[in-house]
Length: 191
Length: 191
DNA sequence: GTCATTATAGACTGTTTAGTCAATAATGTC
DNA sequence: GACATTATTGACTAAACAGTCTATAATGAC
Image (tube, rainbow over all chains, first blue to last red; front, top):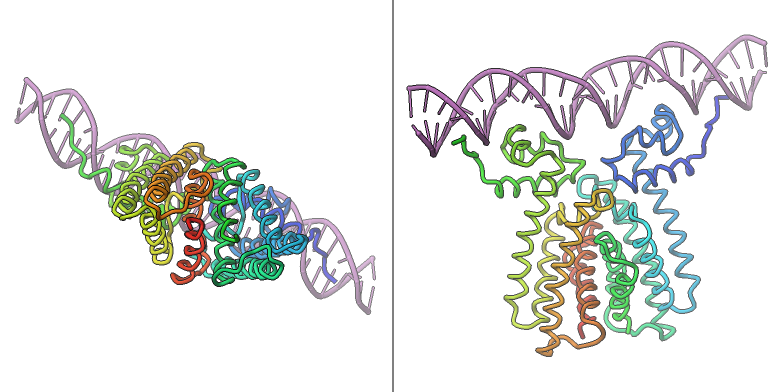
């Protein structure tokens, strides 16, 4: 048998996520990644391939963890409307409290146009979040907490866009209260 | 007297904008900027300082030109509501037709967290766009095309966030029709 | 035309970059 | 405990990087 890995890939990827989230793909050097993960260069290259492959693996890892917490957030709420409101408040807390932002949103802005695999990750993520929001909208329409007006799919897509918009708004110096007020307007589409 | 400049700064900045818009600050090398602008290194450094200063100058130039076309777009419309709808359709065309996106939105995502001067540009831009949208909302409330509900300022801020959200949504592979449907939902907050 | 001054071109510099490699360490099998 | 196999370490490489410098060119003043 061969020498075993001294690390857990997911733990390493979580640390790579933090590095990439802070400085982007181009802004994060392999040395930064060594420091962030605690691994040596050869270990990183041996385990993940090259920098781009590590980035893609970090992106997938991030998407997986976000996906789980998204579904938990939405499913824990009592009504469809409450689920959507809770998601918005989570996004606002992230946008106001963390200057580095969402790795997937950053990837969409920095790399999706030039890297087809990043574009796929980003599109795949949209489909998942949109799907979860669609379920919440339909639940809300069924339980009466969301007014049934127009196509539910368009409503879900708009809500996803609104979360992206709130994240971007947070980058322009808006505080929590301002984000909340803007989110309140978005939620009015559910009345 | 001394030798005169062989170029127009604004023309050069417009070309730098295109370079930075395509690949971001970190992704654009000084060599890329030489090729994009047609200037030699020494001319770029002599005229603008260093790479960051050139980026900031490009950002200000971009903001200035966008500001003008924004006001033209909004003022040309007959009603407040039509002004806002026209702006949304312009944003959708940009988001669907141009994979490189808005330099200011990209700057917010890539650099605002790490560069205070970029953060100022981005915040300043938000204030201007928000102000223009506020005027359009108030105009709409006055001419009856926009229902007066809640704070007009929050409505304007939400509309700005919605444009950012639509741009971000365009990065995730949505086509024009999908963007239009999402924008339609956002505009429902004006009913 | 000469001079002072600034612009330009292109070579140059030291640093940082992504990625590789040879030497060594750690494992299960036999 | 020797072996085959894979992981790790840290030095190494070639290329790309931002920024500088020297030589030369272009101007208005005089």
